[in-house]
Image 1 (cartoon, rainbow, N blue to C red):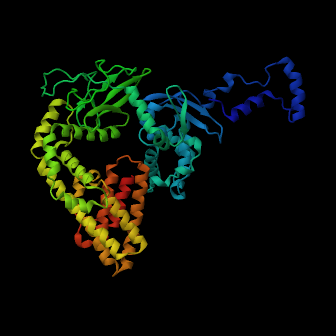
Image 2: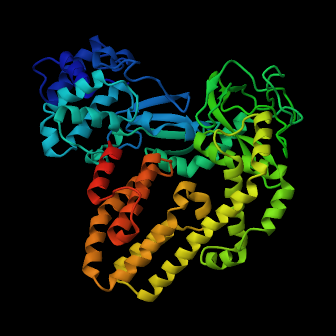
Length: 558
């Protein structure tokens, strides 16, 4: 890291005599003096790299930054306007999806104070005035906050609220006003060091290169499974799983304590050095670990194994993100269940109650086959895939036996729920078309209907909420019935609702597809508020009002 301009100025100021004060006097002095001192006015590398003098050490400006479980090389440049101004970290493509936004917000210790200062300067005048002097506040924050523990903005928000005693919100920090060097610059490279992309928007890089990153990670993992074993219940004293390794590590998704699977770099050998990836139609692969370790160049990454649905069979792949792994694993588990109960599924496919009538109501969304598939998938989930999911042959075999007898009853229940939703959806669509409401009302209702009943509404709506969809849809119809009699009232209620919905939509976009249980809960509170505002006769399970949702949003933002 080069010393700053002030130290360079101080170096030259110490070398020049007091009477050198112009270009001409400098030339005369230098011409004579350089004969006696050939290295005159030449800074040495050590002088340019005076770390301690500038407060720059390997602790404050480390040569590597740990991102995605590995140490990434870091370089620094002080050149405003340059694409690499500030810190640039080189991220191998296989680690890209595991890089944490929260960690990157903190940059490195030596750059943190300036970023904190810029953030608090962006606040409104009232909270900002209560933090004065801002320089001292930023220094105190850097000294007391635990570095890279949580998101920087969230930790700073808590500190500002405590000091200012003002209800500052996250969006009050004008992050769009930050200079580029206050954001980490990422240089993504392939295994040969070739640059694949560069920028300061991590989400954009993941969007552009995420699929390639996942493929690179899976190629690195190169998971190979042991030879097939018979699916038989195994007790505590039975042969240990071929995955067993160094000790237990609890993973986030399946609720069981499993050891991580270590895999050495090289990719050609699995736990037993066996054949390439296998196709499975039964649980013949021993215990499936929650996590696996992948060693690369002396460093260790964490992978998340999952069953992958291949229609006629399942395979095992390793993912670099737990949420993605869980999503694939659910589908893979469902397929493996279906392969064990083929005869029962054939019967069920031909005997879904009133499927033809349901298909007619579903026509604006999709085909009868797509509806049948959703009904059966949801029935399988409810009959066999209650959490925690099975993770060994014995628990999987028990789950099959437990769910087999109730599958038909559950499928009939799912079909009835689908019928109720589709019936009210058809009525609401017809009413919207016939009543011809003002454009703002029509647009609002069209967006609501698309949100409530998308093409895969059975697959994407939680079972507990599915039961409420008919009431929400009925509320749409009642709103349209009342609109002609009192359009001013509808406009007023819509004006009360819109700010809350806009905040929700913005926050949802900021999450970039990452699940958030609290945000999902707020989404359903918005639907209950619509019932309260436009169709009070239908009642709500709990008291809701604009004021209550404002309070709920404040808690969610905090």
